[in-house]
Length: 263
Length: 274
Image 1: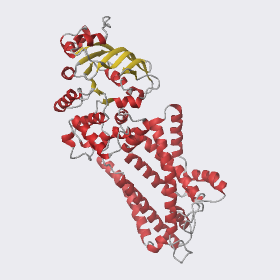
Image 2 (image 1 turned 90 degrees about the vertical axis):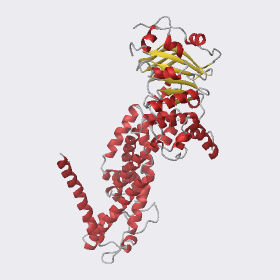
Image 3 (image 1 turned 120 degrees about the horizontal axis):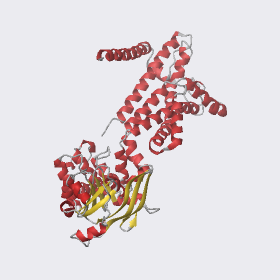
Image 4 (image 1 turned 90 degrees about the horizontal axis):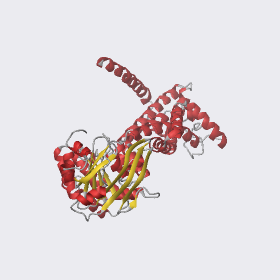
């Protein structure tokens, strides 16, 4: 049994290691400082992904600003406040939302936001990513808050704390590292999304000048380069993939560092 | 087992048996019934808890003693589907009256739980929590003074004064329970409810808690639920015996353990059931 589980672990982790090392090997050759800070140029002239890195960061920031608070609030509602049929309906809808293919979210935001604004924009991209984040954050928040012992809530209530202070001051801090892990999972998930950005943020060859305009992102850039017929762009797609993965790793480590168990 | 028909009113018992007949009742409960959904857990309880005395609630598991204790600071309100009838007067005011302020009540009636439940915060922040949420003081020095006072009264100060900023979860079980007592004392309540505060502790930690209760009754009115009859005999001035959601008898502890009025009480105390 031990041997079997060990073998399965080796296969699973081995596949991951092979993917990561392959990306690193293909990507590392095209990475240099100019690649990281320049904007794309025509084939043969080099160029970089600086605008895509900034664009991805902007899109992620927009998505987090909208998605994390709403997701946490929904999770808190489901675990602490909601009772009866309405909470059950909300929980069912959240579960359903988690399973919606991301391209559907993209089309939805295209129909509701882009068509109405009459142009692609960073806002639309951020909204699409936020919609994907909300159910993930909500469900992990709910699960993590349920793990907080009931005795802690009673301890706070017995000191005369009103419910909202118990939630904000005791329950959420006690579940903070779990909630942050959920938020991090959601960030990692959406930072790899391409489909919902194709018809919302669209992409751009320039540094972003405003949130009301189309904006570049690493994933869309990778997609565009990968389907092109040029070897140089293929190499740049690999390099951009490596950058994307490094950024996700950086986010993970940072969040883990700030939410590590202090008590 | 039949319900005794000759149950005397608690008020009479206290007045007639207590040495301190001038004691006034801090808490006066009349005809209190409590329901979990359709299940009636407490039947028509009437009892008075005298000021600055320790009253112990004893009885077998499931007799309603903890439920009763929790009606005194309305902690049962958080359980969905529960209902209360009758009234509980604290200093003459009915805490179940429409518009009664539950937050104010819980400030006045502190509670210590069976399992110690320190917050995952520092020792200092645990004790300061009640002071902060009730906006007792915003002055740092005063806050620190109140925390020290509470920890001293809970006989914990000397053990933790050098590590106030380390996690409360690093304390031993007995220390955690005294921290929870300190947390309750910090907001200077008038009544302290204790739900089997020593049931999870070893004999040494238990004796510390019992000594503490003895000291605290100089200032506070204390109600304590206990499974341990020796403990009730050691720490309390009055003892109330509950059975199947009914109050069978309340009397001075001395009388209760030597010559109770009710046959049922005697049977329970001598270990014939329960």
